[in-house]
Image (tube, rainbow, N blue to C red):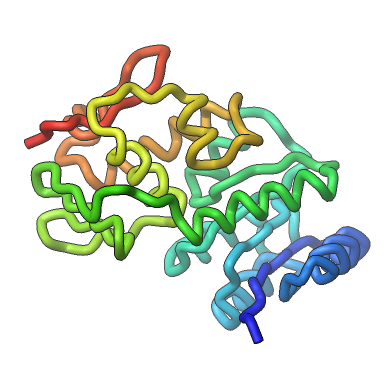
Amino acid sequence: MAKKTKILVADDEPKILMFVRANLEARGYEVHTARDGVEAVDTASLVSPDVVVLDVNMPRMDGIEACRRIREWGTMPIIILSVRGDERDKVQALDEGADDYMTKPFGLDELLARIRVALRHSTGLVSTAPSLKAGDLEIDFASRVVRRHGEVLKLTKTEYELLAYLASNPGKVLTHKQILHSVWGPEYGEESEYVRVFIRQLRSKIEDDPSSPNLIITEPRVGYRFAAGAA
């Protein structure tokens, strides 16, 4: 029997929790629920879900803090739900380790689509090259392992997908929209803050000097390119 995909949903509104759980289970997912941030962190550590969905406004510990705690050890995709939808709130959530952000109220079809995108991060993008080396950075596409100075880097699944996409197109200028479509999915195209936040996070892990990068180069008002001949 095939192993079911596990999804953890945390929300302090029982009706939302029941609605989401019923619809996900009807589609074959194994669903675990939590009603506050502390329970969400504890459940995530116990069941190791493939995707985590966290509401921001929960008792005992809010969703942003729960995201931060889970991200200390977990690399699974995390989707944040919030009634606030301005860019500053989205950037804060992404900065703390979230992979995606949805504004309440949301439609079931949209949530299902976001979960499918998150799961694609788990299965990965395919590269035609087995590996790539740029200076002290080495990307093994086959095993999805990234090393710097010989040490394995801890990247979230979305961070890896972004790096793999850039590195699979060395020297090519990739627009914000191209990156969003390829890494997050065709449903995305206007969320340029996602790209900015994750580029910043990647640079902090792979660049000698993130403020003066030589691997991921910014093309002002257009997008980014991976330096093909980085030394």
